[in-house]
Amino acid sequence: MITIALSKGRIFEETVPLLAAAGIVPSEDPERSRKLILSTNRADVRLVIVRASDVPTYVQHGAADLGVAGYDVLLEHGGAGLYQPLDLEIARCRLMVAVPRGFDYHDAVKQGARLRVATKYVESAREHFARKGVHVDLIKLYGSMELAPLVGLADAIVDLVSSGGTLAANDLVAVEHVLDVSSRLVVNQAALKLKCAGLQAILDAFAGARGPAA
Ligand code: PRP
Image (cartoon, rainbow, N blue to C red; front, side):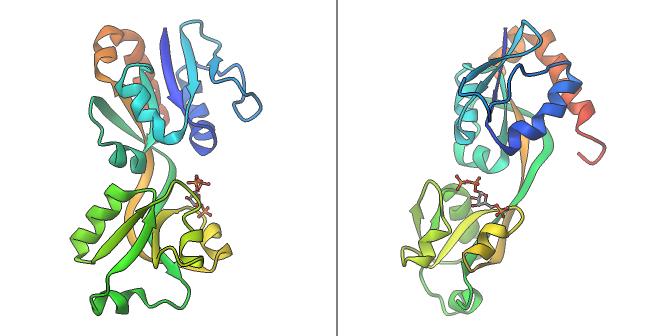
């Protein structure tokens, strides 16, 4: 049995065509089902539906043989025990620093101000601000980062931006690029040896289907 860990939403939707290229069709849509283990048209392949930030953990411990996880999530996890053979170039977005409209971030940085920054991505944020020489106190949040500067919890946030709609709706503006994010295939290293033929066929199909841009 080959177990693939995916998260609901964009990653699931954009992985479906890659699965199809490997001859794998999920039996159900996770948005409509509350099941966490989904069978597929192939008796030897199943999908497990987990939180996006938990995908690396399931694969690291071998509870899933492979998974699809955002680069943002992989950087926070650290990637131990994970083979990362492919950037799938799906679920693309950007990790950005954002502040309330009217707050002069660059001037505050120039003045050497110490900024309170709320984020789910503390490792990436720490590295970014250290590289830039910006003094920050990081505040770990688990979601709805955009709220933090609006209620005085933080001066700035580091968060994912895709369409920019969430920032605009909360009167925030992006002021600095941290990194480009897309989703990657991650594979359990022991499983790659034990289930070599089955996993390699899926890896090859994914590599062939992700397009010439990747
Ligand atoms: C992400 C991110 C932003 C939003 C950006 O949140 O944290 O809030 O999407 O997308 P946009 O630029 O297209 O508006 P998500 O919905 O994944 O939920 P989260 O708060 O749990 O991270």
